[in-house]
Amino acid sequence: MSTHHSAVSSKIFVGNLPFEADDQDLRDIFSQAGSVVSARIVTDRYTGRSKGFGFVDMASSSDALAAIDKFDGAEFNGRPITVSIAQPKKEEAPKRSRPAATQNEHSSRSAPGRVTRLV
View 1: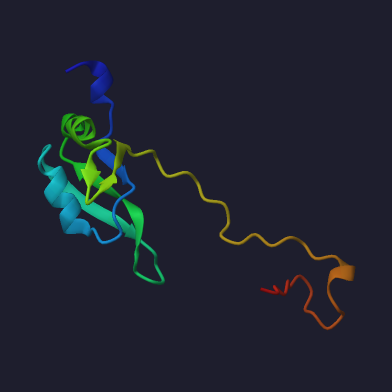
View 2: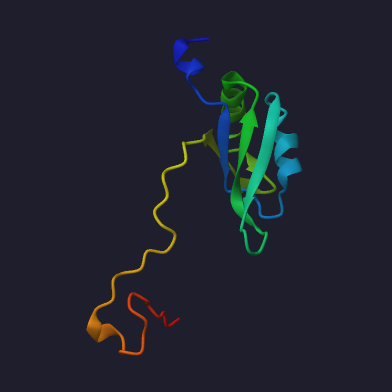
């Protein structure tokens, strides 16, 4: 094994998953390529529905590379899945940044600094 591969993460990203797939489906499929430590499909926190992607932690970087070679572009329930090394999570911006309100934007009854959204 080359030194290049030793720095490879064992966590892989799996995209374009069928919405009916669950964590166990992901574990079952990826165990064909090596030892799976964990498998998780990302779900919407409010509805609990799959977002169509997930992450699989393989036991080693060589297992992760084997899974990528085996499954990237493969069909899973009729959908071609994308499999790659997971990228580190980027720092998130504040969830809802609100622009500063000017005096003309709101009536004098609005609390200072409070933005009313019309949706």
